[in-house]
Amino acid sequence: MARRHTLYSYGTHFPLVRWLPEHKWFLSNTSERRSSSTSKHQSYVRRHIPAQHIEVGCMIDRDPVTQAASFFELFDLRIRRCLEKARRARTYKRYWHDRAEYHLGIRAKFARVFGVKAPALPDDLTTTLVTLKLAA
Image 1 (tube, rainbow, N blue to C red):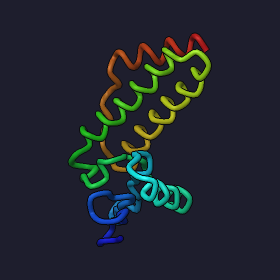
Image 2 (image 1 turned 60 degrees about the vertical axis):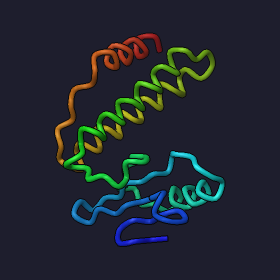
Image 3 (image 1 turned 30 degrees about the vertical axis):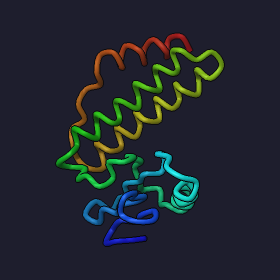
Image 4 (image 1 turned 120 degrees about the horizontal axis):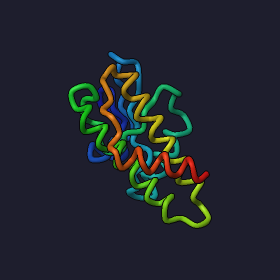
């Protein structure tokens, strides 16, 4: 289902992609899991979405410029979770470290695309990143 600039999975309760024509970018919600049919829709979106998209999860319906602080909190939470998993992992440490770096890149891309100033990373994230890089 589509309405204006948003594509949904079976109704307005789960948006998949939102086009922001003023920025010429897409916000996508292709990582949050709901049902097998929604997962299939997410797979179609991941396969066909243009390169100019940013994965923001369930916050897809918020305005990226006025709600930038919320988006950065989300990105920092994702980075924190990946770093915590990397710290506890035995065999997949490198995978979780790479995922944290991926989310760092998404955070920087978001700031660049929407012209908002990214707040400094919290000290605990910076310390953990440096520690993991030195250990690698």
